[in-house]
Length: 103
Image 1 (tube, helix red, strand yellow):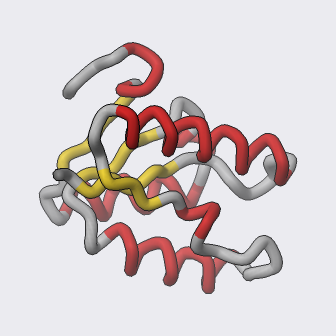
Image 2: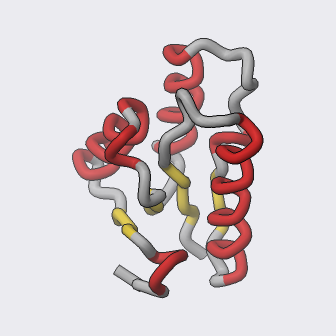
């Protein structure tokens, strides 16, 4: 089973809506048989950006793939996670949940 990390915009998003978008992606990816790492379950809402990214990058490094939420390009953190995933050879999945793309 592939372990997939979810990446998307968090900073500046309404907390409830942000958490819901990550949980929706988590649910749909799990339904397709993936083991999922949801950063909104790992990082405290009171954590500062640098600490949050340390936690996220550590967990990303333990995954086989990264799933990019549609808003990822609007996020400094998600763009960093994307770059790390590409540089370390992780499979990058775009729009899987929305379009059923198995990229």
